[in-house]
Image 1 (cartoon, rainbow, N blue to C red):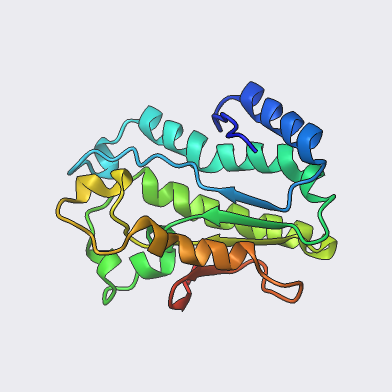
Image 2 (cartoon, helix red, strand yellow):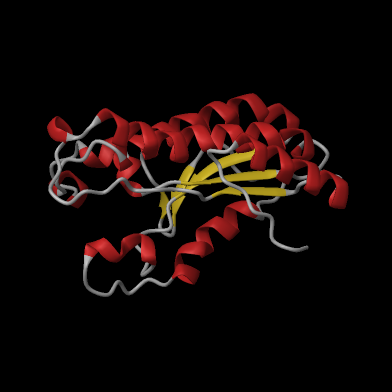
Length: 193
């Protein structure tokens, strides 16, 4: 299959992608929602973050997942073992941010990206609840900090490759029929919401 251009903030491209998958394959077995933007501005706390900046991040990282998932659901329902994997981040864990002993609680406060990933986690749970009886497993994964263009603002060289980060996503995308649904996982196991 040739690549399909899809902008998660553009309903026309979402609908076109769903129509093309339907025409060429008639179903969709796995949906990995991996589109994301950070909205990162170094040193910018929530109190000085423009609402439009947060809105743009939420539009891509949360609303985009909702739009794409809803467009693909008819195709996923035709699969004998459909899986949805939402690529989240450990920074979306409210538990870890509020634990004074966890390194995430020591990160500078930010309004956009962590908030969007917490919202994505909540959305993941809601889809898992809705689709469980249909046999569609819906989970969130955190690939960890990988050396990619997305993390270049962190400085230095990260030791995890994109392939390392993809391992947990592949695991969730290929779960058997008795696999979990509504979980948030990294390489080490369950991440607290």
